[in-house]
Length: 394
Image (cartoon, rainbow, N blue to C red; front, side, top):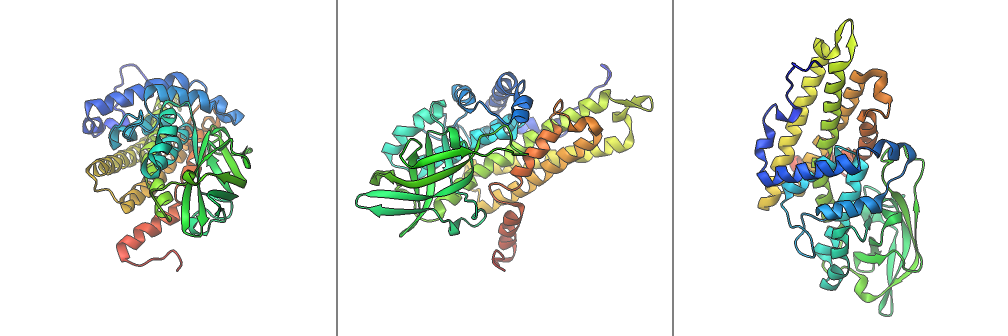
């Protein structure tokens, strides 16, 4: 696009950055600079190869203070919810898989230990997880039990003072590079959480290959074959599904913000491309149909930001509910993947190349669309709120 053409960034149509504090904007700028240096130059290759240098990146995010940044104590930054959301947005603007690594570390594994663990468990793991020296994973989903975790087959039984765990978990981010796994298992007393060092006898993790989505992410199957743990390995602060479900609500908040980054990057990439790509003697950005696509996408992106921002402030005020998180997750992921797909149409054949981020984001968002609760699950959560009737088993 010609140098004398003035453009407004999609999120500045409504001056949305003014909704953030100076500190929140500074955090966003710092995270963006970090991913510009350590992620963007390499992520297309990682995606193509199906690899991720998770440990090296964890140390970089740890130095920046991003891991568990919304938690208090244990070396965590203790920042507000919106600041964490802005960080998630900037990380996912580079790649959903990298954001997933950070989210699982801070909002699932660290959060579970912070919220429900003993002081001893917190002191043992959280400081090292905050610096990225130790990586964590979160074992809830099973091959046959995704949306219905109450049917999980993994079992924990008492044997004297010890616990013995048997079962398997599937689609576990960070699993085969983690130092500690928070594993949820059925006991005689309902669902309980366990802090499982990954070097425990009987624990194994195998990376899942041949993925078409989230390729720049470590995804694994966990197997627990008679894993014997001491009595104090159990998370003492929670019993039942409230534990894992509250962790998922925490992680979904990061997704609500994160997908704004994917969508924003797609839209910014597409506007830049459309300004330089000429057909019929002029840039395609100057054609009415192209502008309509860009405007429609920008409007949905801005509305999604407003929803994420509202949820962040509600979380900070203590008024956010799981239903609010479901509304935001359902809307923002659905709109983000629609934006990514529409952007691909403007890039034409170039849109399928890894030279551009658009289809990589779209492929990743196919996973984000269904993990941490499918669209169907969140639809029924919101439907229950509207009608008072539970349709999950209807």
